[in-house]
Length: 406
Image 1 (cartoon, one colour):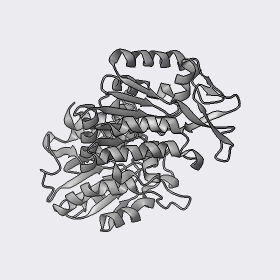
Image 2: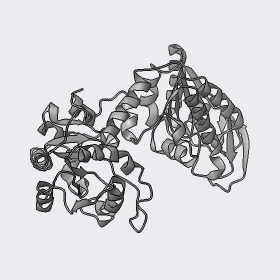
Image 3: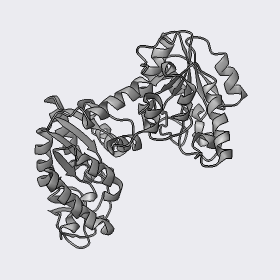
Image 4: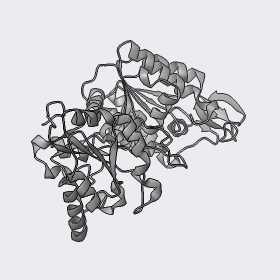
């Protein structure tokens, strides 16, 4: 398989699929350019070789052409981070895009308009007419370049035109992963295949149902599985506890019990919360207190873990050599309920200092480490939300398979 480091882009036009789906404020200013910064090394490598780049991305979930989701809003930021002026095409497959792409000189960059302004970027190929229009769309994108580089891990789980289908138009020597996607693949590999034990996974989130496939896959790999966040209360109720008004999936109580049994059978140390920081309403300004997770009074709800649980989690994490964190311990968006998530993050940083490999992924977990200033203290912070979760589930990601073949 071709690699970006081994390829000389001199005189070549590279179509680079990035994930520049960044947040904008009401004045269309970029409020967090983490994803743009993450994609810059790949673009700089191509340009420094003497190649030119055609940058393609989506932004948001537009229904047709929408001013709010135009990539022209990020042009200034991309140019600043790249250190050179980036041209812009107000379309991605129209005549303007074709002419500007054809006219690119070595060292020049062109940003195409939002790929998702065209339904063909995402369409299912169930009907012949749809297949044909998507094929034309994909061929048009591919025809602009000599090389295809996928650097968008955040969309690698989508079999879209620009993330998977386009790869078919390039031979194995002219399609490759960008630096960011390479790093993401390697990071996932370290926590799923190249494991240094003990391996601890911390799974947060509100619903057992959304994490069931991940949890079941991890039960075959981890030594310790910490289940936290809103899922705590489904497990507590399944064990016969009283959880007050805490979030709970009543239709998943049996499933929670089954997961406890599976962990026991597989010899996995399943670590559940023993106490919670509770509130009399879902608000940062609510009255608060602490209670055992199975003895929460009526009218109160658990919004974070308590100090006893923090200590238990920290002990397990600090003794680990491989750590995966996906999901906060509570409603970290409320300042009064950040302590549990912060304590987990700090324990991970401490373990990392001692030589553990730590991977933090999923939007809320990434937001946590950024909010608490801990991102530089962990081994790797993933840019992929859904893509990372599907990789952890053991699924094959279309955007990776399209280049690697498996």
